[in-house]
Length: 249
Ligand SMILES: Nc1ncnc2c1ncn2[C@@H]1O[C@H](COP(=O)(O)OP(=O)(O)OP(=O)(O)O)[C@@H](O)[C@H]1O
Image (cartoon, rainbow, N blue to C red; front, side, top):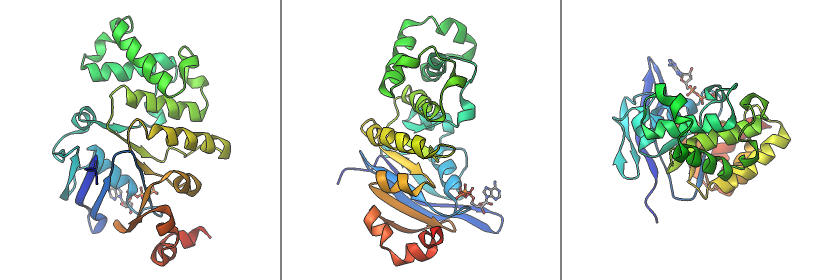
């Protein structure tokens, strides 16, 4: 089996008496979408923050492409290939779609932000940003003001921004949130194609999307992974139904 792109080994995080991550070990393999599901407060965001570098685990390690990145900060992990899709608030709403993508590409170039004005005239930077926008299907919206995009298109723009850093894996925290059923269906089709660019670790409450997309699903309850398996295995697991899916009705 191919080496995992990302793996966590026994991640443990306590907040006072609460164990928010309780020895979490999982991996993401090339080409796959690995979904993490669980009830509110199960520890999904805490897990993502430890993977991306915003939160230090008390115990455990994070490996990216075979490299131990546990001691690296968020920016260093992004440079090492961890592509976190930004929250919508990270997009500059008054700027154009192209400017937002160029901001991402500028981050990769390592040039100080104060040169952004000059960088907007940089042909290489612009070409990279345009390429990433074309890859997510926003080529016809380069000069649109970001605020005029639909929620779904903003998600695509967030992915384009992440693509400018040439990620080896995408980490997505509830990308379907705030989308209607039509928007969710469109974004599901988009993520299905995106796995060809890089595998995806997907935290998502929308079970239709999870069951349509995931190659494997890990179920988190009270900070512990109680099961990892294919969609069929997870859906038929009595333990999972009792702990989580049963509550969906
Ligand atoms: N900084 C913190 N300090 C103290 N407790 C925290 C902190 N961050 C999270 N927690 C607690 O850790 C537990 C896990 O929270 P977390 O946000 O990771 O869950 P989640 O699965 O992402 O929930 P949701 O689905 O509602 O987003 C919760 O009980 C939460 O209250």
